[in-house]
Image (cartoon, rainbow, N blue to C red):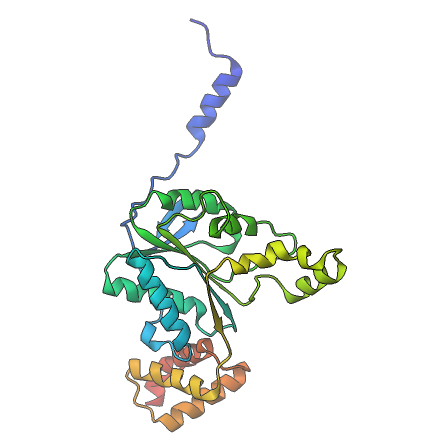
Length: 281
């Protein structure tokens, strides 16, 4: 009996050495997952780091709008992909996670939350093919989404949101957060307008990506009253007995050291306060 040729033996040896592909994770394994492009698997997240929806202050309109949109989607009705853009630390990603939790409290396990990292958008078609086979509905979430001049990953997202033959699966909704309204730096937009032969057309492909989100929710810096309302809400939820005057004075001093007032600053102040409560009280 003739022996296999050398190339065949090498190929067979490499197959034996190669790791087996990961077993598919059942869609009911968790309510939240993180997509890992390498090795191409959905990793269940048993406990999501989030803040309850009732504790998010100063973003009432955005909260109500996103919650209504998500409820529609969970109920099988039409809903829009959503872009949450604006000031840092004002609760954009916290709102997405809180709304997901709120809807699942109303209808247990109705929605899965699947996070895809910005630098893995090129694998989006592979992920969507996986989610398309699910019987469960899923919110695909990308935090801090933006693109640079030579970035081409936006094309994968663009075809999914609108215009591709397949488009997004009917059981998938895309939520993204960004500090940029048009997902690209303002200086890039202005530079392309000033140097292009046809300025309006030069940036159309990238800027039009934002237009493909049916829902735009803007987040802006908060004033002192809103900041104090955030602090009071956190203090009440943790059962702190410090007087409002003392609490506000300490919260204001904390904000001064950070040079800003925001939901993130309020939460960081509360973590510091809770860590010292055995000394303060």
